[in-house]
Image (cartoon, rainbow, N blue to C red):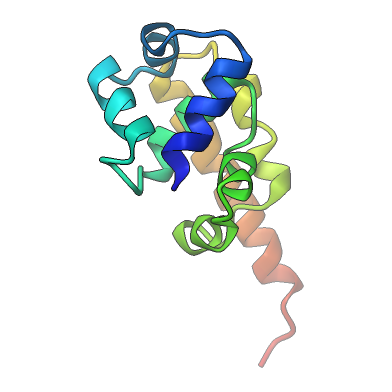
Length: 119
């Protein structure tokens, strides 16, 4: 489960649930339920905001929870190069972060398609 991993990272950084929730733009109730395992599969968008607030890549949270395959299933085009940008965008408004991350995904996807041999 991803929730206990989020709690562990939060506690290592000496953040309260409320502080993390505010920074990640989620409700403290949602974060509490996530950490307790009530919510087992947050969206990549929500997890990216939480990861950014914790200053870690979303994939690192999934890896720590032993769920890296789940992460790749949610967005197989999301490489470690793209996810490394998420924490750096943490201070931007949500809409701007989403636009930038989506544009990065598009660029990486197009590059991957260009490199595939023609069939």
